[in-house]
Length: 178
Image (cartoon, rainbow, N blue to C red; front, side, top):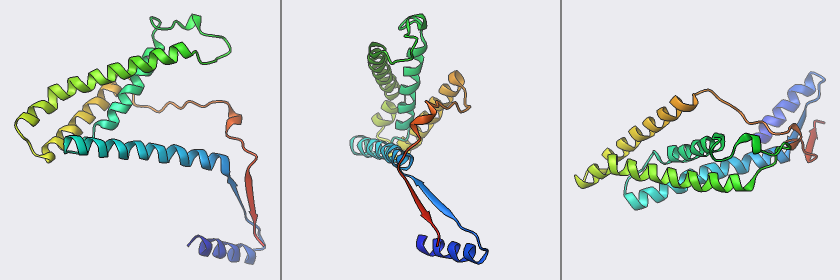
């Protein structure tokens, strides 16, 4: 299909006396592929593990990932843990802050999971509810967790853009048309 599209594009542009160049940035393509594939892998492994242990699809598990990330961000913003006045001026990562944030976010997200399990899912398990009911409850938990994060952090998109040269790669393929 791709060869057919490229051949059709070549014939069309050749008839118009124009040339098309296709450039592939292998560095950005490889990083993007690894990022998305690892994200989908984490979601698939999480759904598989929760289904095999709990016998229902817990759709709130991705919101627990999100909650852990936002707890880590909130930890990094607190002056109690690491005042910004003590931060190095060159912008380097302070490993002690990273370690504290990692451990604290892990513990608090685990506690949130235990609390939600006791408040929501325990009653359904004691009543021997079907897996459909448990999945609907997990969707409700997912919506509530997402709404709570939106209340605190907002729903607009904020991008972290590192230095511009990290995406520039010398590995390019140029496929000029005939």
